[in-house]
Length: 476
Length: 152
Image 1 (cartoon, rainbow over the protein chains, first blue to last red):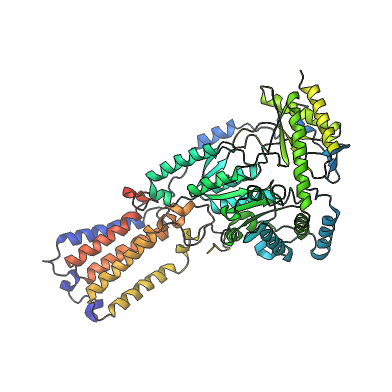
Image 2: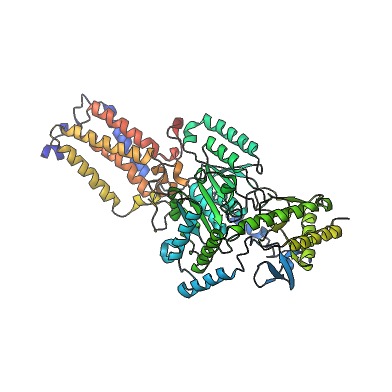
């Protein structure tokens, strides 16, 4: 063994010189030298920022001119006179001291004021206290959460549901949980802000198709397919998503779901459907657009809903197959890193859900009211308002037929009309957008929401008021 | 599997610089070599060459071929297109971990040459395997895919 570990003579050490050419030794010497060079190199980060010289620093500091936190604001800026709402925002609400009919807040099924639901919330406070004291995975899960998830999954006839603590963060977390860098998302250009934020977070490549335009989506998908064919190895590791809303908050239109799902199937896209507005309002029993179109719900990979509009609580949920939804329990950032929904709001959402299940006439009435409002508002076209939105949608948008060229004037005109309506007892507000952050320019509009408790007289009164407003502001 | 609660978006960037890893690495190599040596059919030079080849193959597969991470990293797919070697220390070059992993195949090659007594057939096989694992470790080839090999 001694000859193995320690060379006993020079011949052992170098091998047979005649066989081993000099090249071996040269290469070995070179390798040792290279290794030493490698070991003594200083470490660096590739693509580091160029270092600034002292003069550059001085120059930049001297050039810096601090801006005031708030620049000069015109005295008539709407932000200087915010609306103050006192009391509950139910069927009626008090804005700046005016008692107004509420056509502004999303309370489609009138669950905000419902006594029985309030009582359930109060009972829940007595049992659990006000907060859940932690995220779902960290002591924040209370039995009501599990119960609500089970109920939601059962209500939507899908395998599993997960509940988020905030409606906005539901879809904004759900999208980046699945879509990652290098993936592709096809999305309607009129999607709401939460979806846009979710797509920002996903870092995926985004294709916007024209609002509700199946042809345009098909064109984009065909174009993408051609690109993918050129590089099949890349396409193999690229996931494709289709993100749509059931009823669009920004337009009130309903998506052509069957056609979209067929395209998604043809081009192998995973579909994420946001039912924030349509859940609890659209479909015979309030199960959303899938029910409205009679589509098999399993064809949609993930349905996202909000409990803040129809259910009158707070939070959101995702339903789908267990395989898909389970992934969010560790990958949905809003689910993992945010304190869970307070038990009182969970209980309230559960009570609302039970109400929808037990009271199918509620939905029929809502549909009647939606139609009533739609027909009444459609009559305003001769005075200068055009209505967009599906007949069955609880959200309608009133746009000006002949808007001023200047977008600022356009907005302030709508603001004035809204002020006029509030002063005269109907709360109607313009839809608000963060214009510099929206993916596409949004047309300014008055957003009307439908409440199940609206009476024919109230709708007539509101329409009359809008007619007067048109006469005052639009005639010139 | 999901990344645990140690605050790392992707542990692939750091786990190779954990304490005691160099010792474990050397012990692992030694164990592999001793196991091969204990097989009666293999002569000493063959055992060394096989050790070297297995070691370099592990480097090629785990450091230079497989991309991404075995768990779900919290980096929105940042590392999906990167091999483990490129993820080490978030891409910083000439760090201690990189120097160690660069030195390992070279030292092993030199030892193999020594114990195979520079026999030409062994030398050629070992040298080719060395080149295959050394070239992708060069800083010039960071994020570079020659001929598009293993690009996606």
